[in-house]
Length: 295
Image (cartoon, rainbow, N blue to C red; front, side, top):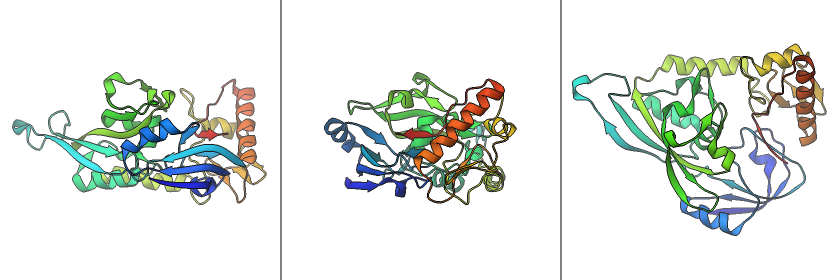
């Protein structure tokens, strides 16, 4: 375990915004979680900071990172000899345990190396496996829970348990794990075979073309309302390119908010307030943040 006192949190957020935290804790073993939960209050699980907006000023918060937990273990191989070569994962599959701190990019690389399939559509999403499991992240019709059999979580009292996905509540961009503020320790994936490299590379390229990745941002800021797209609604309100302070609604993809350099927490939250107010007044739709805000 490593503890950094008075941590400068802007260094740990993709948005490059954030004040000084009481401490930032990096754990090296899941069994250290119980001690942390029992000896501290006001703990926030940071993940990779790819979708977390952190307040400025002094923060009386213990930030917790699991990014050093990144092991991958093949726990079981299932083969149907009568259907050898069948890529249907009901007949031939591997069960793979992935720790929460592993970057999604590293998991996709592991999948390609082992010819696993199932998550090609989410290639290029920034973040850790734990962060994506926590919010049921996804894209292009694929969600990470499509390939998960079981999630290992640390509950609020420090107890570590494994829960089958059939016993977990999850839906679009949220889970029972997130709502209960449990900590994702690992996930057990069920992977069939036949990695689609073309689809994976296509999704990565689409992100480069469609998303403004040249400036600090937190990815998609608002959840898509049912049957519509947040980006379309924001665009229809004429908000593309709007600047408040040093924050901007991206021209390229208006569901992204950019740090033009030196943006403050208030600059960004003022933009969020403007977007929600404008969309509600024009369409009667209440947008909900997809990003996590630490106040």
